Length: 392
Image 1 (tube, helix red, strand yellow):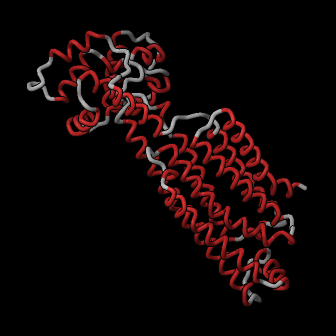
Image 2 (spheres, one colour; image 1 turned 135 degrees about the horizontal axis):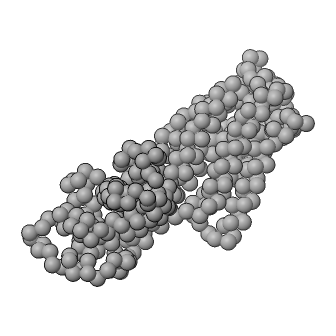
Image 3 (cartoon, one colour; image 1 turned 120 degrees about the vertical axis):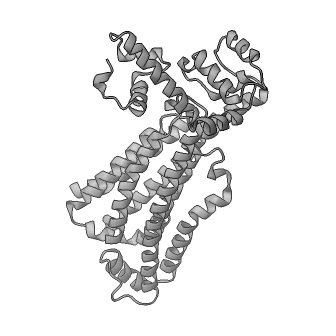
């Protein structure tokens, strides 16, 4: 009974996540969440087939094993498409051939598996199920039954390669996204995809275990409570992915599209006072380089103390394109807009604490433009390297 529960636990959790995602999409359509739903449906189907295997529903194994092969090789590519929806301005889903190429190994291996089952005789199928699926060996197999064993071995190799490639590609996409928003925003916490990195780390650990378990063979876990280990591990990670995926977060496309639309309309949304515009207007274009103008504007008027300061706002006040300003900061200061602003904030914080040691961390954070003390403390550690005892 306990073993049966462990076999079904990932399937149940995935089914619950699928229902929750479907209900959330009825209330609010969201492209990344749509792909997460497809991923959840695929994962639920995968573990349903997994459950049938361990329950010895042999009459359905030719069907369930074929579907299992397709789903197993689709899970990681689908999760990569979901990451792309969050991190890419032009995600993979907008390039149909990219999606087809990603899912091609799953479709080919699934087709090969299904074809082999279709041409195998009932005797060959029964022998394959007994010898390979539950015994983990190709000894005694011949003809199409042996070919089916080769197809399954190839599928395991493809799965291992997929895990490595998807993890590497996913991390790269998230890193590129963060580099992009750090050029545009002083405060990136609410726009960050650090939670995706956390999920990727969990998936890396799970993937390593999946590769080992895949190499060992599902049949080795049968009749043993060792099945509890992969079951609980997979269930925890799947629940975490579903839970964070249900929380609404803007995608890279939404964030950058909003900025582009505001530039096209010529409307720079900001809360800066009009006296700053006068300062900018008084600067001589041919005497003061763009970088110096930007530094004078941000530092002398203490724009860095403004909560959620955007590079677009500064570029609008300077009457320049944000691309030029990004280039000026990167080339002249060798840092992103986010780093530049936060270094100024931390320097300001040190002055405040030196002037009034009784200030609390929360008071200093709010005075320096941070929305939360935790944001302030992260930047303090990053740029000052001080311990918590140095911040009252």
